[in-house]
Each structure stands twice: as structure tokens, then as C-alpha cells.
View 1 (cartoon, protein in one colour):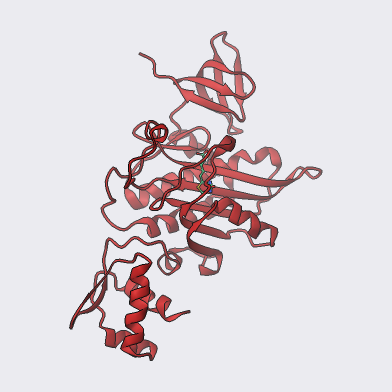
View 2 (view 1 turned 45 degrees about the vertical axis):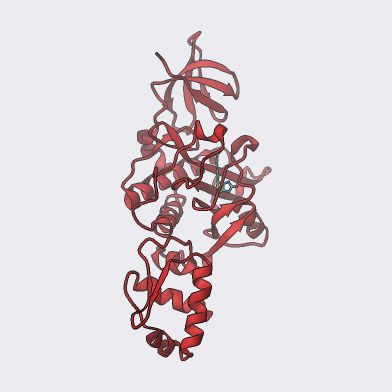
Length: 322
Ligand code: BTN
């Protein structure tokens, strides 16, 4: 571990408290100048550290830089720091994990990024991923049949809802199949990508990618502003991204061990059943009423001619009935 990382570890475990330069220098057997240099780099990376003469250094409660030092200690076994990579930016966290999968990385390998340059959503859409959000992906090597793969996204949606409730006390809702909503706006989404053994009918691996809008500092592009929201309208009340990232990873890893068991909670959190929707892609497009989430994780809909179809993929829009 570099001196910078060691210093950050100490500041994180004493968040909000003053730690003298002399204390830090003594712990790591380096000069105070070396400590000062490490602090300068940490500040350049965005950590909010206050320094005062005769007071030492203090990591502010509001400092919200994603770091391995802050996330790793919050992970539940078997996850630990060897599973996680935390980076400032990447093209897409799913693409990063795809490379890990090709290099035989174990189930649970994950990456957390502050920003994505080419974040992807379902159906080839762009997922707007500015700095300050939470973008993470985890690799799984589940023993699942290809036809059971919908349960992976179902378990992931429940995992995010549970983690957000725990850490932020915010109740998200799920729009089948992979959208996370708050107050009628989409605040997050899940992109599950998989490789399969077609002959054996089994999944080889799955990548679960999760994107969450925490709060928007900047004005959003118009087309996004109409549909997208964030967990918080203004800055969150405290630094929470590291805590939230760890909680999501913990819930995700746990639920993905038996993904079908999340179905009941998924149904409870889903807000489409009972509502009029427009099915815009899939087996049959048109206006329909969403009836239920089936035991296979499909959306059962009834069209205007009373035909009922269980959609296992496709895109649906909510219709506002006057
Ligand atoms: C959707 O809205 O259709 C799904 C959005 C999924 C976005 C996440 S962000 C982390 C991971 N990396 C990506 O490129 N996409 C997913």
C-alpha cells in the first residue's frame, strides 16, 4: 500500500477528527513533509481534507470520493478488497468486467466508477453517467439455465432497493424489468449481460451493471431531464456513495446466490401491475393493462382485445390515464 493510501485509511477511520501530521508521520515512519505530500495528492483527487496549524488533518464528513479504502472495510465475506476495483472513470463498467470474465476472474469481481464515458443501457441506449453518480458492475458465474436468466436482473433490482432503503432510507420502486424509480422518475437502471453455453443451455457468466443517479450538479440535457431523476434533489445529507456502493455489492452478492428467491419482494416493489401501459417492443406492440409478474419473472399483460401475453422481454411505457 502506498503512503497516500495508508494516510487515507487512517483519515477514513477517524473521519471528522483531527489527526496530527506528527502522528501520521510516526505511524508510517516517514517525514512530516512526506505526509504533507500525500495529503496534497489526496486533496487533488477530490478528498475534502481540512488542514490547520497545530490541528493536523481532518477528513470532512461530506467528503464523498469513491475509494477502495472506504468501501473495502464495509464488505461482507467472502467479498473483500481483492474483489474490487475503484476508478475515477472508465468507458463502461460492464465492459471492464467483461474483460475480467475473459481473464477467468472469480464470481464477485466488481468495479465501481465515479463516471462513465460510454455508459450503456438496454436496447443499445446511452446511460448518461456524469461524475458524482454510482456506476458499478459485478461478475457472476451462476449455475443457472439460460431460461432462468431473468432472475439475475430481478435479484439485482431487489438488491439495489434494499441497499438504498438501508443507507438512504429512500423507498425505490421497480418498473419491470430493470428500471428503478422514485417519485415517478427513473433514478437508476440495471444492465445484465451474459455469455452462455448454448449446447448445455447454461449460463457461463453474467455481468450485472447498476447505475444510480445520486444528485445532479449540472443542468441535465433536455431529453434526459424529462424522464430522469436522482435520489436527492440537492447534495445528499452526508457522504454516502461508498457506504451505498458497499451495501449494494453486499446485497447483490447475497441475493445472486439464489436469484429466484427475490421474486416475491420484486413483486412487492413493482409498480406496473394494475396500470395501463404501452408495449412498444416485444412479441406484440400496443396498449395493454399490466396484470402481474409471473413466476418466471415475465410481465403478464392484457391487450385491448383481451388477449393475455406474458412478456419475457421488451419495452413498456407507462400511460397516464386522465
Ligand atoms: C438501463 O437504463 O437500460 C440500464 C442502465 C444500466 C447502467 C449501468 S451503469 C453501470 C453499468 N455500465 C454500463 O455501461 N451500464 C451499466
